[in-house]
Each structure stands twice: as C-alpha cells, then as structure tokens.
Amino acid sequence: MDIEVRDLGEHKVVAVSGEIDLYNVSELKKVLFSVTDGSHKSVVVDMKNVNYMDSSGIGALVAGQKKMKAHTGKFSLMNIHEDVLNILKLATLDKFFQIYDSEDDLL
Image 1: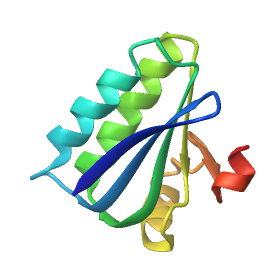
Image 2: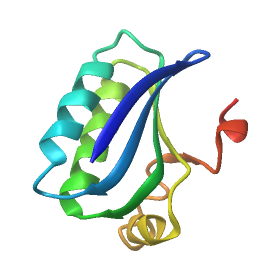
Image 3: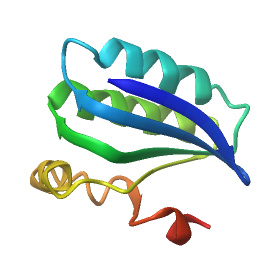
C-alpha cells in the first residue's frame, strides 16, 4: 500500500493505492490520525487505486471520520472502486460517509 498526502483547495487529500488489510492498516491509521488532528477543515480519502479493503480498513476509515467530527471537520471518501463500495454498502456505511465520485464533484 502506498499513501500520498496533498492539498486540494481547502481539502487535505489522502490518496491510497493498493490493498488495505490487517497487515498494513496501521500505516493508514497513522496518516489518518495525523491529518485529522483538527488542523484541517476537510480530509478526503482518495480510494481510486484501492481494489480491496477488509474490515480493518473500514475500521480505520470510521475512526478517521469520528476523529474529524470531534474537531467539527468534514471527512469524506472519493473515487471508490466498485468492489470496495459494495463492501461499504453491505455494512450500510455508504450512508455514514460523504462519498464523492470524482475530484470534480468534490470541488
């Protein structure tokens, strides 16, 4: 898994590539916790290049959402691969997260 953090207007974008699973989720958690510290108004996880995510990845995203909410910030997802979106839908988390189809929709 590779993670790149960049600014996009008022948003801090965390672009993730590869699979998110129990073996590498700690790296994602570390990055998410650093950008959801209250110094940014909006954090967006770009999942364009994530084709697999297990429950530990879902847990990391939920934790990021809760931490951002505690700082009255916005946490959202974008560019979700269909297979990953289906997992979120099964857990009804597609309603929990604000999900954007693309960067254009975000802006």
